[in-house]
Image 1 (spheres, rainbow, N blue to C red):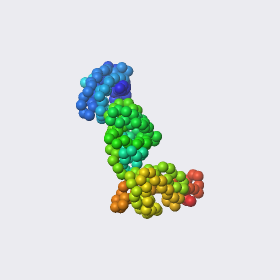
Image 2: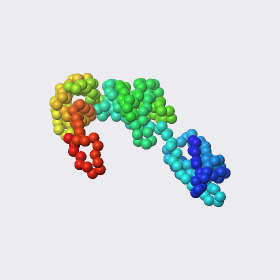
Image 3: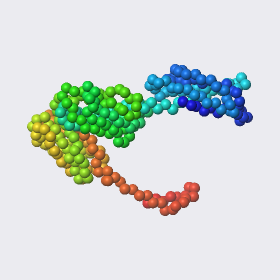
Image 4: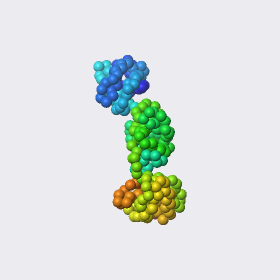
Length: 282
């Protein structure tokens, strides 16, 4: 890190030979100390950050002594750790053994902002199963068919320095799976996996109002269900699959009908207004 310090006296004259002492603190603990003198009112403070840095809480504290008078200044060190937190969300709520499913993810940096990442999914032996890469603000998804008896981990390769393995949620030995196969302006195509022949109910609602509710006679294995969406308003729709006991088995959110947003145009009666002049808008 290089910090450029400028020093002038009360007459706005650049000082020469002022003593400059600096302390580098990480989480309040001094990790380095540097001394220098000013030349033509400037001094460059150079220091290295610890290689095992785990916190972005760093400050540079500088004390300048000129003719027996000491002044101090403190500045934050702009540390970017590129340490990310990866959150994993199986589609519908759970992964099911031997059933193909989608896993959405979101990665956040140390400031809680979306961080773009890429990496691979490995099993407990380190064997690569699939790869993943975010496509917008640290968000993305990948397909996975979990095998019985195996555990899976996400390994981030970019940005570097994130070496921890992140465990994926364990797959259920049996259960239902709700996967969105495709979405058009007219309809949604769902693939519902059932471990046996069963009667289940699929309910779709938006803003608390139910737009779809149908009892489904599912066969063992994958079942395709089509849902018309042209009458839905713009916004997030919640589709819930209820089992025979009317308990939630799976749930999926879908953003629908973005083209139904309000089209608003505002026109003023003049191009330029005087202070406090009445403004008429159409």
